[in-house]
Image (cartoon, rainbow, N blue to C red; front, side):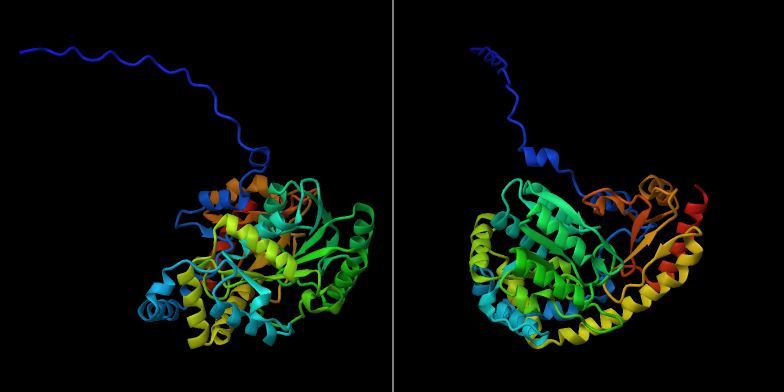
Length: 408
């Protein structure tokens, strides 16, 4: 028998270092909110940190029926590629809802996106060059700051108050800094829950008209109103109609797992966003779009939203009722008329980020306010989400929060 000698081991290959990540990936960190949620994922933690709709309020039966109908009656279409702009049936339904809320809109005015977060990314791709100036509210939706940071934009905060950005400060910044766009969440803003009054929206529209400024008006929470009267969109003002992009979403009113949003924009910008979307994901999943269109045809989404808003209003009231005992003397907070968030400020000596580990040890969590600022942060602020927990859980969570703050 012939014995074959084993082949000699190959000589080790010299391994050169890989090229570095792009500068934008190295310079932009992850979301502090996501990092906090990872730490607070234990089931015993009462988590006021997330921005999650209450899952027990999802119309799971209605959504399931919509998917079942689509997959039974049109499986070939539902499981096939679709157009980048979005399924015509869904765009028609969304356009009708937008028109009914005071902004005449046709299906061709809309581009369906994979969540309204994608709409922000597409707009940054279509509008921004590195070094362009973007104006934002102070504080601002955190993921918008990330998007504009990735685009290489110079992001400047517009001073404001409990009613949103200050139109005079906006005018001064536009004149001095020559920004390309303003990003705003004027209704039940994330993180503060505040709503910009109609007269300020008109002033923003007029400033954009005078100075040549794009407005991105993000409205994921506007339908979740508990009290007060609806304020018309900035996009509905004649002065800004040709320069305002309105973003919408089904995440907060139907289900975030569908990942369905849209943007309403002037034609040339909408076309540019469609080209950017082709490069990103070709199109938003067909089956999700058709199921949402079927749901809107078969069910009363407005009635569902009213039920959800009613429960959220009770939960907001429960949080408001317990804050005085939970937060230290000298704290202040707002009373949002809708949405999902409440904003609080502790006395000057508190740093809510530094306090968070001790708070989490008491099995409760919030989001520190500092990451939401484009400029100098107010470290005594925090955001509380009041919609995910029941009234009883909110009471217990505030008891734990108070104990944690007293233990510092």
